[in-house]
Image 1 (cartoon, rainbow, N blue to C red):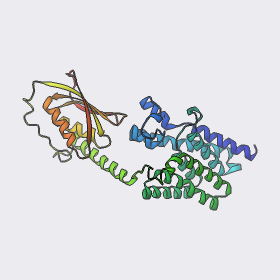
Image 2 (image 1 turned 180 degrees about the horizontal axis):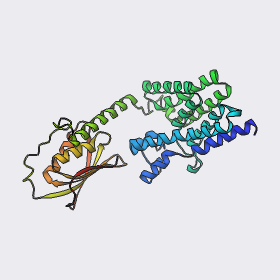
Image 3 (image 1 turned 90 degrees about the vertical axis):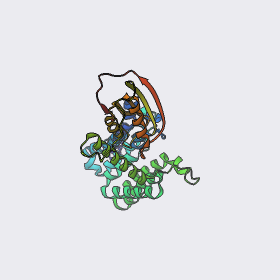
Length: 336
């Protein structure tokens, strides 16, 4: 096979692997809807899926996007490493990004290709690829603009590729840069006018870390492992034994900043202290659903407690009375 044909085959291998748009598959599997109908961007990438569905699903998308680039480059290198060397990896990675950005089965409307681009430059040259990713990350920290960071990564890699890896590797890096410019063009055009959306990545990381700590504290308190109740405030349960005329059951849908803040585990621990049973779970639209039963005053105290948590911001509640489940004997957390 002549060198030009080998390059085309590597590109096609990558393109076919890139058509496995993990974000679209996860979105449809979890919600029954395409990714373009989820979140604010409609992008079938990790960030949008994680924001619209959940952290676990977002990480699955990231892993899938990385895996398809690895699969394409490994196959291309196995077939053509003798003739093309590391260029087989570059061509396959470029193809995987093309397949991700322009998948034929989605009418060529795919993602932005940040994860596939990063995977490609690292697999082509671990040293210069990781250096370029660091430059992009620092740019995002400094500007809070994901679009600029996304373009900086392949751009910095392209410079290093021309200097250290050769002209062809540099040209392929330039193509990756042009694709990233095309995907982020609208966002980049909004920067001069100040309309571009900014993302406080460091602030977001610290916020998620705080939420994780709160979740661990709440779970620790719910398990009773501390022995002294220090991980979870002790709620006032006085007067509940004789309050009300019996059990009632409510379905409550909480809207607001209620996911990623330890809401479910705080609810579980408080409900058990109050002698309530039921369940609580996260929903795909960012809300939290709960069915809780017990004495009416105890349910009111549970809702009041959740509303007083400084990490939780309940903007709206939908409440409905349900028949009591006499067989239910505990309060549990459902889902992830």
